Image 1: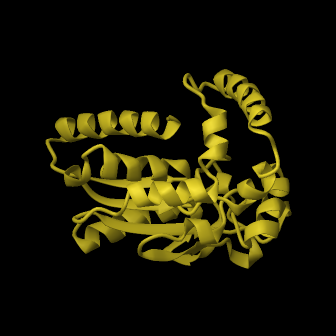
Image 2 (image 1 turned 45 degrees about the horizontal axis):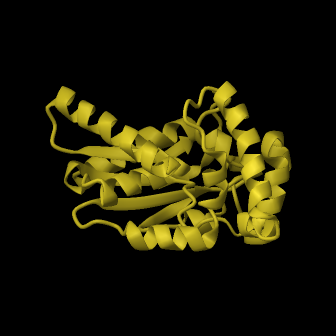
Length: 223
């Protein structure tokens, strides 16, 4: 339900942007679950004809084996209780329609496999994907615990989403900081408003320069 709601909001925003710009199509660059909402919008809400491309960054396309491991032995009633607590916290943070329970359970690998079956890539839309990686928890103490949990269950990750799960159509590579610095899930969204050097990706050498580089690359490709 939460994914459908997010996709509906995105659809409204895209249609407004197209009308304002008098354009026919948009290019979407989406981070984390935003990539899933964009895919749902394109495949299930009839927007394929209005989207030229979708670039996803650390989107959990294949779900989370870590979530399978954590929630596998917990009764559903307990998960729903945790969901209510999570809803309260997210409401305080500004989410007017939180659904923490759905957020937890929808990321199980079986549920994501079903989502992928129902929301395939659409003809006429160019898809590409990127992942992020931080080698140790010291690169982002906020995500240190989750990074280790995902590493134990899934391997290299950015503190929340594994490289394996983020790998989707036209996988373009992994964002890594230079000199061994990690790129965390929060770094990818410029959470700290701090630029830093990364290993070159599409010609970009800083994390903040990565997004303009994606846009320039899409333009060069004709999108």
